[in-house]
Length: 173
Image (cartoon, rainbow, N blue to C red; front, side):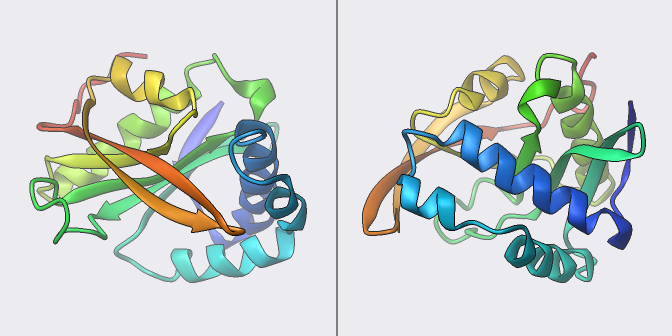
């Protein structure tokens, strides 16, 4: 398994990981009509923009020259609402068949290392209510902070906010 900075060559792979992960992880959480409407092409456009923004940190997990997971993060996008956290883990997705191999920990470790280099120590992450990934973040020391809501396909969804008062920069694999 190779964990490395993502490049423009990873865009198609990241889009596949994103769409496929949403469809498996958020089944029975997000309306099925929304999940069915997701497309690789639209996600590719979004990832092109993110890779062009030097403020956004993006790492990819690769196996056999195929992207199987990725993480993005950077400055907190909701600093007014959560001023105690200057950093944010925006997204972490790994194909279901690669869960349980330590890839998530390695990706988080890389992101937190880069955040530390940018002098960011307090980091938050939002997790859809009902997503078992919150247990992963809790095992890494994240504490429950708050809950927020948003809407997808006319459905109101809750996101639980978790935070690290001091990000664990020495995550053990």
